Image (cartoon, rainbow, N blue to C red; front, side, top):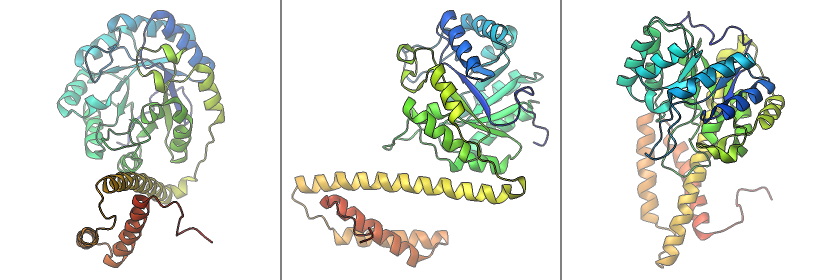
Length: 357
């Protein structure tokens, strides 16, 4: 993909910022949000017109009627405007209205049949296209969706990392799994990758730290949800920030760039950092489960230490390590330490035996 082009040539160098409400709810709300985005120093305005929701009965967007509001915002405030599409009919209406770009949501990216239909509908156009990651952390599915668009002739393409659905306990709405977008960058180094901290965090308090983490990891930009009055938003109210908060966030972000000659080493290090972050999250989740097990054992008058269970776990881990080419001795030490900490958690012991005395 050597001939990939920037989404918008007049938006300057990275980082690229995109912002706007989850949904275009009314003409007044759309224009107010667009004005706030412009005043925050951001040149690309996003607003959903069609909103795929998990359950019926929720606000699913105004639909085609909202497209002229985006065009009006574009003309009034000098913004590029983009919206989500999920069907060839959406694309036809977006092109007829004069919208500058589209993004493809996680649910659509997950479906290769839908992606092929969208790629065909976009054939012969030169519209900007952003592809959000699929629901599951599957880099092949993500890169495959991008390749379908590329094969149809699209060249103004970028990826958007919005996190991944998980059924496990997590601090986030969608678990980041940073290693997945880092792997996508390794495979497609010419492709710009933005992060969507609003959908990852699910809470406005997490938007700023996640945005900074994404830039620290080398992402090319951010897509952030911004609403004039987030508390009244008809969709995703909890994760949207105000235009004033958006401006403050943009001005507070710290940009750290690595010399080009170190890009390969940087990517390896970023991958390690991402994996370490996942390890920490998994260990924290494991200890949460250990505490639940401890409560269950106390309730049923069971002994905390089940030596046979630990021996089975250790044997299985060592066998698995051998098949993966990892040292059995190393895994034995790691799992012994994890088991010791799990026992402490089940006993509700607060003193840390590993702390310096």
